[in-house]
Image 1 (cartoon, rainbow, N blue to C red):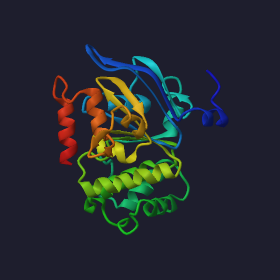
Image 2 (cartoon, rainbow, N blue to C red; image 1 turned 180 degrees about the vertical axis):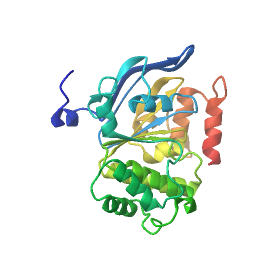
Image 3 (tube, rainbow, N blue to C red; image 1 turned 90 degrees about the vertical axis):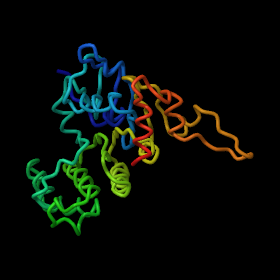
Length: 276
């Protein structure tokens, strides 16, 4: 077995490095050579319609699924050969809040802290309740929480133990606009505290609001990857009465993937985004 990476080596390389990742289920090719890097302390959005392969990428990075080909490293550890070290370095928040509705918000946090054998679980819980603006609701049963409050609590639970890397797999699915804004603020605070965030989303505005870098995953391939400004430069600015209008991320997305795919998925993405 190779020696574990030193702290200096970990700091020198990206928080996440994916190269030529491939995954198929019989004749269905979900990932077709996906490559990207995520800088430490940044928010990276993996943007794509339903079925593009976003969740498959996250499951491979979280060691829940094995790739057919390619390599991936998280926090300096290879996901195939060092899965235990990867799991100690990450936290994963899925598409739906994994909270116990019978318990209070504070009790949920204490439970997770105890399961991780951390000292002073009550102190940890109180600190996270303050950080995610849930102190007043901390003593209430989670069944009484709004969607946004549950999601914030779910993200707070994922932060117990201070993992350097967190995966948020479509964290605002099904939330109303106000709840979505609450979650956006929580994600920004995570990155502000130095946590590396890989966010998957099908909402164009979400990627535009949160991400330092955006990669568009389409039919199992990364077709563009860059900052919002770099993606905008892929399209010429529109001229309206001598006023320059920068193309939106929506303009870029449909320019590179086509407004409709064979199954209409790109159109569904736009419709879903506008309806939220």
